[in-house]
Image (tube, rainbow, N blue to C red; front, side, top):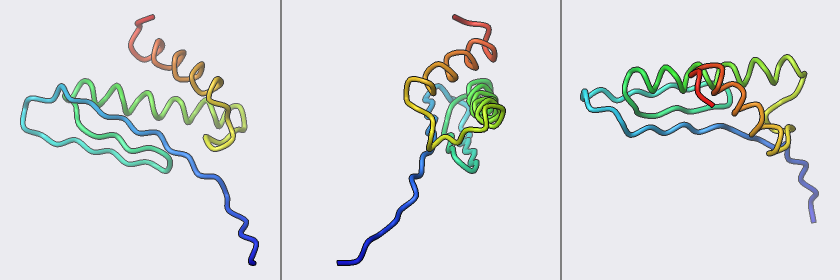
Length: 86
């Protein structure tokens, strides 16, 4: 039997359903895919995904290696920063 050494992969998926202007918005990054939403909502998703990646880079971590608890904390902090909401 052959041994397979697979690297872990991770990605963020952002979905929004508040778009009513007929536009289909899609943004793809190295480790994220964002789909849908109004222009404002899609921009918030873009900024959030970008800032999460910036924070991971600052910590010298990859999405694949960060724990779910850490990612939740990063996402919460970034979302609060982006939107001004708690």
